[in-house]
Length: 61
Image (cartoon, rainbow, N blue to C red):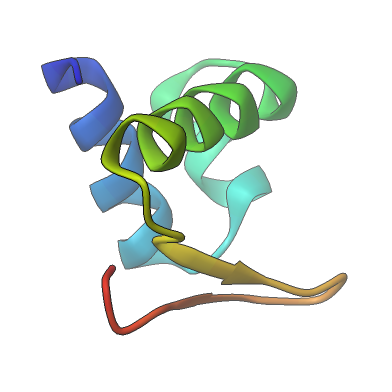
């Protein structure tokens, strides 16, 4: 787990959007998704519930 990944997670949680968070963080959406997935894998829990139109925090998130 890296501090950068936590910052990315907090930004996605605050904006509830991968695309908006990526713009705020000045990174690509693909990079952001990959880093969040890696964080979830390392923690062994799903932090975000994703649909095609929204992102919501899970109980673990």
